[in-house]
Amino acid sequence: MNTHALRLRPYQDLKAELDSWAQTQAIEAACVLTCVGSLCQAVLRYADQPEGTVLQGKFEIVSLTGTLSRHGSHYHIAIADSNGRCYGGHLLMGCHVYTTAEILLVVLPNHRFLRQLDPQTGYDELVIHVL
Image (cartoon, rainbow, N blue to C red):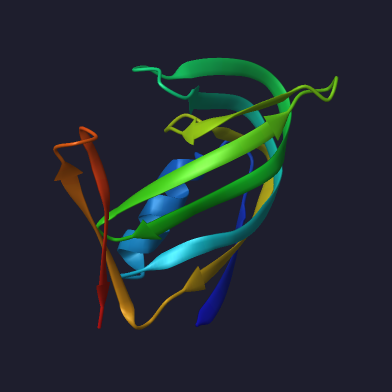
């Protein structure tokens, strides 16, 4: 395994930057080990909902987890507002960094993560290849 550290700056899009990094680095398989930081806008798709929900305000990133590759990604995030209320769901484009996002990624050199439509779920699901 190889580790990589990223720091995102204000107003960068969390998902877009992670996906772009995977493309630029030609990553075949990686996962998010940890992430701390803050958002000034979050776009989450809650469980069993067809569309995303936009949340405005200042939020702490409590957790970010997921898999990524140049072939596609899947992330879940938990955030907390200024009263400590937590929101969580599927990370969508439009999550803008407020002050920082400090991210540690692990690359799995002997794997390839692909995404294929699963007729049972209706979503592009993870297909794992061991190299």
